[in-house]
Length: 121
Length: 328
Image (cartoon, rainbow over all chains, first blue to last red):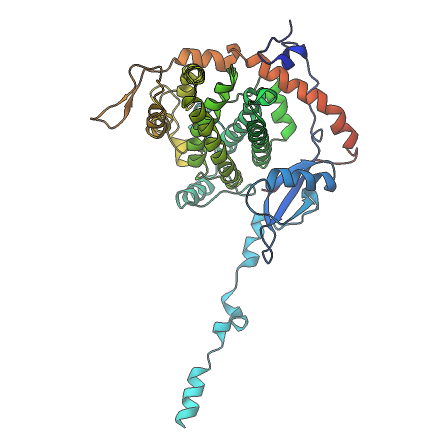
C-alpha cells in the first residue's frame, strides 16, 4: 500500500508505507568542515560551527546557507576539521603565566620609587 | 521548532556512582558556576547520552517539522507569502543542520542519527505527526507551535552544553521571524471575511490538542529529571513551560475573538496559574509510538529524500576521505 496524503505531490510519488533502506555509513554525508565568519570589516574571523561537505567549494556554499542567513557577515572561511591542529585540555597549564616571568609584564617595571629618590637628592 | 518536554529517559543515578567522584564534583561545580561544558571536556556518560538524545531529537523535529508547512509552498496564497514560507521552511532545515552538528560533537556521527530517524528508532516532536489540512493550519503552526518552540529553546539556550547553546542562540533569532510571520497570517485571516475567520478557527480547533501536548506530559506523570535539571540539560519543567505559553498567547488569541476549544481554560485568580482540561496523554503516547495520522508519511518522505539524494552525495564523494568529529 502506498501513502495517501493530503498533498497530491506526495500521493503521486506512490511512496511505500514501509521499505528497507540500506543504512547510511559514516562518510556517506561527507566529511566535516569548521566555519569561521567575519561580521564586519576590522573584525577577527570567529568560529561559528561546523558542517558537512564534499569539498571546500561546496563547504563555502553551504556555510553561507547555514551560517550567514541572519546577522551581518562579510566574509567566510571554511577549513576541513581534520586539518586543524589543536592543543588538548591536558595541556591547558602551558598557557598559565608563571609569576617568575614578571619581566614580561608592564607591571614588572616600577621606576617611580627610583625617580622620586633621585629627585629628592 | 520543537517541543522537548518528553524526551528524557529516567536517568540512571546508579551510573553516576561509577564515575570518578573528583571529576564529577568538578564538573557539577563548573555547571553550578554557570560555565559551559565543551566537547573536549570531561563529562559523565549519562550527561553525554541524554544530550545526544535531546539534541538529536531536536534536529529530527526541525527536519520533519519542515514537512507539514512545506506541503503548502506550492499552494501559498500569493507570491509574497510563498517567498516567506519558503524562507521559513529553509530555516527549519537549516536548524536541523546546526543541531546535527552540535549533537555530533558528542560522538554520534550524523549518518547514524539519520538512520535512527528513518528506521523509526528515534523520536521527533509529536506535533508533526498531524497534517496541515488548510492554509490556515500553516498560519497556526507558524504562530503557536513556533511560539512554543521559542519558549523551549530560549530556556535551553541557557543550558550547560556550549555547542548546543550556541546553535540555539542562532536558531532563536530566526524563530522570531517565524513567530511574527505566523501571527501576521493568523491576524490576516481572523480579521478577514467570515469564511477566512472560519478557516482559522477550525485550524485552531484542530491544533489546540497537539499544542497542549507540545511541552510534554504533566510533571505529575513524567520521569524524574532532578539530575538533568542540576546538569542544566533540562532547563524548565513541562508544566512551567506550558503555563508560560498560556500566559503569553491565550490573551493574544482571545483578542482576535477566536475561541479555544477547552471550556475549562481560565486563569485561576488564587494560584495565578491557568486551569485547563488535562490533555489526552494516552493519545500522545499512541501517536508518538507511531500511530498518528501522518507518522508513516513523514518517515516515507524522509526516506525518499535520502534515496533521491544518494547519487548526488556519491558523485561528489572522494573515496579516500575519512570522517572527523566536528570540533565545536
